[in-house]
Image (cartoon, rainbow, N blue to C red; front, side):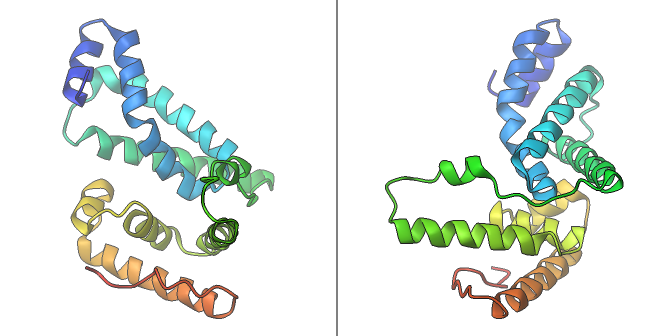
Length: 194
């Protein structure tokens, strides 16, 4: 099954197991990327991904196709992740952990100094991102990490391109200010809207 339409047709025609497997394979990485921005912890992110997939598969038969599957999954993921954060805050369990698996999966062929710098920058960014308002964090991650265009971001979030540009701009300013107070001086980050 090469497309969402084929997956939907197979699911609705009764081939649910194969369609479900194809659906998860096709969208799991996308959902993980969105959830990770909110959770910033691998295990918590995996829990969110699992819940999103369960919810999406439970509603797949009645999906109306008024938006793309990706837009639909994006909204489900944000809702599930936000709810998970709310529950964690109530229980006083919200924490920021470095992702051991992320560090272990680095390319062992790269220079050790480069890996250390990348790991330190990742940890630094994870910490700074948790201080940003949700919309700014989301805009930064979608634009800088996922390299989405503002049009793509607007379609996924239902937010105007102008608002997304403003949120990205403010996120960059806050991250740059945090970097000025730290030891990091990466030259790769820019507030350009190109």
